[in-house]
Image 1: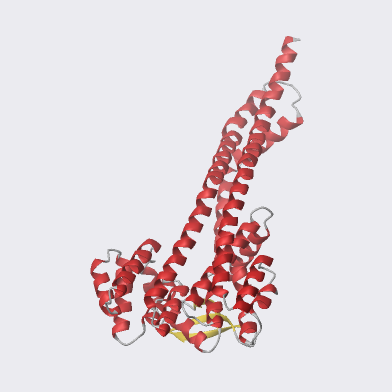
Image 2 (image 1 turned 135 degrees about the vertical axis):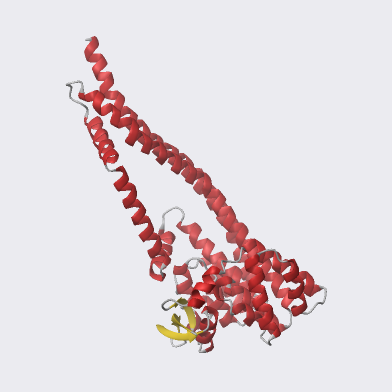
Length: 403
């Protein structure tokens, strides 16, 4: 047994942190949820051999996880029992991490646990949305259908994530190459001209003096600057990994002038798609809302959606509770309102997801069409300024010699 510090929201609207004794993170989460709480953060208190063992197990690759689920769906469709399906998949499983995890899951199922509880006990190795979807499938007797819906959801999210990442690769390469070129100019090329100009007893232009001063400072303190940036980057990264730092960063991303709308719409699609997946699998609204909030990558949005759960549990309409967060667009609120009143909430959520998928593509294309020339102009201006600061006094010297 290990001690976990759990930060959770409770039905009365309060958010508190408390200690929970459990065998692992999954069991601690289940204990808090059994008491009616919504978990925001769980961390192990102190060091334990169990925690070290879990870290040594590594992580499950998403590709291996998707293939496993596709094969599991095929076996269940063929009429094989869950335990027998696991045995067949374990024989063919090549990933050592997934093999060990699935072996533990099979043993729990053989011992009488449900398949959803068996996966839940693995903690954060599997998405929470996955085993909550399985739980809904077990209750409705449609595990295969639930798995198909979850698999479709996961593929869509992965495709959208890859599209965003691939779109931003070229601008990031441009920025990196420009920074590298400017660094070489300022630390290697420009300082050599300092000695050259020192041989001439001539007054240098202000631009040249400023650039030479910056170049001299960078060259003398290059290692110190690199070390300072490395330490600052490491500390910033560690702080962002904390709950407070992650929420702060995510809230800043939403407020960025050009790309903030893209981050907002991506969070909305994550929420609507995961909520629709859970509702379509038979999960009641309140548990589905709890799990959908946890599936949102932006922690700032996730917390605001989680704060809606107690209000909906008390009987407030979903669209009104979501509107009060100030996160969701008017279109999203109107579609959810129509879905609640007509009994077609799942269909309306799917429509919102599809609409914003297309809008994200359009906005990304616009951002790239603006960012690429902006980077070229900005970096080109910096490089031209550096070169001009060098050649301007040379032109003056040549003119003086001729005259």
